Each structure stands twice: as C-alpha cells, then as structure tokens.
Amino acid sequence: QLYASVAQHFSEGVLQGKRVVITAGPTREAIDPVRYVSNHSSGKMGYALAIAARNAGASVELISGPVALPVPEGVKYTPVSSAVDMLEAAESSVDQQCDIFIAAAAVADYRPEQVPEQKIKKSQDKMVIELIKNPDIVASIAARKDKPFTVGFAAETQSVIAYAEGKLQKKNLDMIIANDVSDQRIGFNSEDNAVTVLWQGGRESFSLQSKSLLAGNIIDLITSRANYSKN
Amino acid sequence: QLYASVAQHFSEGVLQGKRVVITAGPTREAIDPVRYVSNHSSGKMGYALAIAARNAGASVELISGPVALPVPEGVKYTPVSSAVDMLEAAESSVDQQCDIFIAAAAVADYRPEQVPEQKIKKSQDKMVIELIKNPDIVASIAARKDKPFTVGFAAETQSVIAYAEGKLQKKNLDMIIANDVSDQRIGFNSEDNAVTVLWQGGRESFSLQSKSLLAGNIIDLITSRANYSKN
Image 1: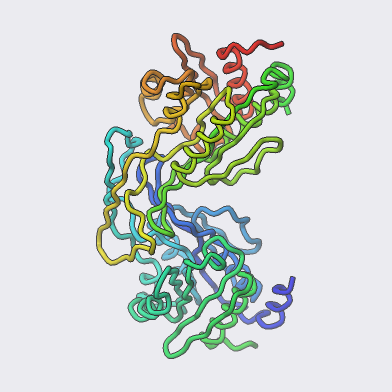
Image 2: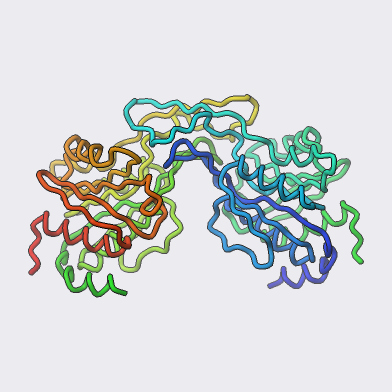
C-alpha cells in the first residue's frame, strides 16, 4: 500500500510516548427500547486516523459508536452507543493522559428527552419526538484546564468553511477539519475524502485522496502544529 | 451444520415452483441529509428465512433494509432504505408473482414529515421532530385481491401474544410470528430466537434455538398451513 510506506517514512516514531484519544462513528440516541436516532457516519475517517496515529508511534484509544469496521490492531478500543456514553468515555480517557484529542465522531446534536421503558405503540396518526441538546464533547475537552491539543470536525452540507471557522473560535479548538458531506464522492460512507484543515491564522487544503492517505497527512499536520519534533 | 441436514430432510423441494418474497432488516427514515430514525433490527431472522425458503426449493426475493449481513447466495436481492421504498419494492415484487409473503422487516412505523435538503443546524436548545405514519407494508399486501399466503411479525416488549393476536385479525394475515424483543437472549441482534406462531384458530410455540433452525421450522409450518403437499 502506498499509504503504509508514506506514513512510515514521514511519521515513524514522531508520536512515540504520546497518548492520542480519538472518537469515531455515529452515536445512537434511544427513542424507546427498539427505536433510535442516528446518522450516516461510517467511522472510516476516525478509524483511519487511529491507525495513522498508531503508525506514528502513539498510544491510541479509539472511542467508537456502532460501525461495521474491524477494530484496528494495537489500539485500545472502547465501544459506546449514545453521546452521553461517549462523553463519559472521553473525559475518563483524557483524565488518564491525553496529548492529542481528535473528535472524529459524528455525535448526535440532540437526543430524545423522554425514553419510555416500553416500545411506543403505533396508535396515533402523528408522533412528536421532543429532543434536547446533547453534551458537546469536543468543546468539553477543549474547555479543560489541562487541555490536550484538540482537533474537531465540521461535517456540513453548505457554507462549510464558514461554519468550521466559527466552531474553531467558539469551541476553543486547536484545529478543525472542514468536510463537505453534501458531496457524494467525499461523504460519510465513501473511501475517499477532501478536506480543508483550519487553525488560528492558517489553513491547508487536501485534495481528494483515500481516507488512509489523508489520515497520515492530518497526523503529520497535527504533529507539526503541536510542535512535536520529529526526533 | 445440523440445520442444513434437518432442512434438507424435511423441506427439500417442497417449495419448488413457488415464489417467496421476504422483507428483512430495519428501515431508515431521513430527518435531513445526515440524520435518520431507525431501529435495532439486525436482519438475521429475515435472512435466515430467505435461506430456509431457498433450501426448500423456492424462488426467493429478499427486500432488505441496511444491515451488516452477507447477501445469501441464490436469492434475488433488493436493497432499500426507507419504508416507502420498501413498500414500492414489495408491491412490485408481488405484482410479478408471489405465493408466500413474509414481512420480517422491522419497518419504521413513522417517518419525519418534513425532510429539509440541508443539515439542520444545532441552534436551538430543543428540537421537535414531527412524524407521520408510514405505510403498513404487510397490511397492504394482505389487502390485495390476489393476496399471497401472508406472514407478519410482531416484535414487542410487552403483552406480546395479545398484540400479535390483534395484528393477525386487523391486518387479515394468514400467520403472525410473535417475538418478545425485551428478552436479551432473543432480541434483535441475538443469534437465537424463541417465538410463538399464531394463525386463525391455532398456535405453535418454538423454544429457544438458532435463528437458522427456527427459520427451517417456520418454513415447514408455513408450507403445512398453506397446504403445499410434500410431494
């Protein structure tokens, strides 16, 4: 594979001794015992980042919502379902030690306010689900006193760069990866991606490439922005 | 495998020349381009029934929502996403020819009324999703003048037999399979299942067994109730 050799050439050992925590995949928010709200995240980008960070020598924990991907070898794997579960796992992992936190999960913004213990019966012609805001996981991590280098994602269908710029500032992130998910070639379930990475006072665009190759490039960029020397 | 030999012994050729249409898996109902409502159906029971019907000599079409299972060999496979798509595929398949229709899919009862073309932004503290009733696929098929032998499922978390009995009558089904999904051993994602099968004036209970074995037993029971002779 092209990516394997590229990654080993540029990144080998550069994250030795660093602990990287990555969230990936969608979350599922229960409506009742059988129904849920979720989204089309495949987890591929987050899993590729976990592999790239591991290849760069980091100790990696991957906190993942339900996806259909194999667990990468050599990473600590923590499966979760809801956003509340994911926040708890993320806080607990960062409590241990965390140098770089990458929030690649597509966390559900809202969850149903009431979750009955029994399946809701189909009696009415209409049904209304009232949702409340979920915790903002990446913002919670970025608000910590002992904040790691914190990387967010902005998966949008319009005005992608503007929304990403806003999130970078508002959530106090070190870096944000802007992803136009309205484009089928680079959307949630595709093998390839093209993104623009933004930070305070700079940005870099990556053209269409495999998520594996892109993950290696993003890990290189994080390493460089976080000022980890290459030896 | 035990099941393979059992099925071949009792069912071999009994559905030769018959066309069996089976729905399986969950449906996904779009909230916006990235979010959806779905349920925990794994598709395992429906896929096992498709394999058992094929093993009994039937020509099988499997209309499936998104699941993580391999497509069974030797069946016509029609992937769908929403309940509206699934209804359309089912009606069109039954239009061709259908002797037995088995509705094993966990069709979403409701879908969001409005589906915006852009991702809904997280601006409000609360969000309300208004849902309308989805078409009732098994009831639509059972209401046809040229109605096939129609089998439904009742996946419930309480009063399972009573709800199943009600559905059998109200929807004019020939048979219904009552499944208590509150029991983790036999729920949506387990390998095993235990069910009670009900028809007009009769019922039969199947104790905990693999979904493969159970599927063979259900196909035998359908064959017997539909009065297909064994040679």
